[in-house]
Each structure stands twice: as C-alpha cells, then as structure tokens.
Amino acid sequence: MTTMGEAPGPLLGSGRTADVYALDDGWVLRRDRQGYGDAAAEGAVMAHLRGHGYPVPAVRPSASRTDLVMERLDGPTMLRACVAGTLGPEQAGRTLADLLRALHAVPGRSDPAARVLHLDLHPDNVVLTADGPRVIDWTNTEEGDPALDWSTSAVILAQVAVSPHPLAAPAHPMLAALLADPTPLTEAALAEALRRRAANPTMSAEEVELLGAAGELVRSFLGAGRARDGA
Image (cartoon, rainbow, N blue to C red; front, side, top):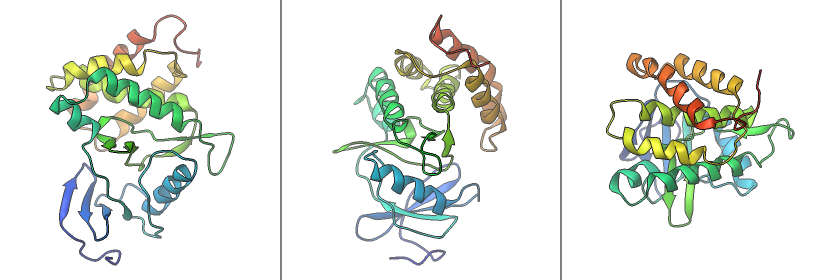
C-alpha cells in the first residue's frame, strides 16, 4: 500500500479536480489536485452511508485532506453505459431518482434529523457494477434539505440538455424520468442550486451561461403542485 503523498500506481483516470490511481489488492487512490475537498471527511461520510446499507465503495480511514483510498469498482459509469447504448436515458433517470430517495432515508451523522446530501449526483458519478449501482465522488457532501440535492441533480442534467453537447438529446428524457414522480424539489432550493452551480470554480463561462435556460427547463417539468412552495 502506498504511503499518503508518495507516488501511487498507474493512473486510471482523471476528472476536473482529481486523479485516480491503481493500488494493490483491489483498491484505488483518488488524489485531489486542486485542494477543494477534505478526503478524510468525505471518507467518514462514505463509511457512515455504507454502514446504513447505501451503495458506496468501501473506504480506508485516513487523516489526509487530498488522498482517499477506496474499493476499486468494476463496471462502466452510468454515463458511459448511456453513450454505449447499454442503458437507456429513461432508466438512467429512474435510477438516479431511486438513489436520491434511498440516500435521503439515511440520517445525518451530526444531526439525525437532517439528511446526507450528495450535491453532485449525475451519471458520471454512478458506477454500474455486477452488484448494482455504486455512488462515487462525495466531495460536495453536506447535511441538509433533500430538496437541494434533487435541485442540484436536475440542474446538472438540464445544463447538458440545453447545451450543444452531443449528450443533450438523452439528457432531456433522463431529466424527465428523474422528475417523473413527485419530488421534494422547491423553487427556493432550485434557486440555491443555480446559485451554487454558477459559483462553482470548475464551471466554464459557457456552462454558466446555460444556467438560465437550465433553470427554466427544470421548472417546465415540475408542473402545478409538483414542487412545494419554498418561499
């Protein structure tokens, strides 16, 4: 096993803020290269969720803010499965909704009356393993109102749906499936999700410009009585 801060094994992949390296014995190291998160705190939340039966990778305890050692998962992300045509967008949207509902059944660590929020749950953060979907990347996690989690996932999908990206076409039915049943999403939570998304330092100027249209698309799916009055 590598020592925190030392050179790990082969690079498996890179995201906007972190790199993932192979380790021995079915484990990987995710190393934050931007300094946005707290790996130790993230790992503690994942261990809490796993203890309540929520589908997250196993993690090894660490005091590091940048390095998180976790179980290596075999399988494509939900995004890759959709691109490959092995998973339909409607099924992907329903799975995201199921994962959000299951997550919000878990009590908070610091306040059992609150709920654990992912705040970045989208198809590239769900790995489809032989044992079912597993949710990764808990960098943004906090405790609070599930309405914000639903709003955040909806905004992320809507940003893609209103963009010129090739995935815009499947993102639209995926968003529709996510919001097909009544959700706790509120106008106030949607506004907060849009505000946070605009302030996200990983967003490009082009992505931020899409937020107005994305917000309107989410509202178009809500309909009368679909959202609570959050004012």
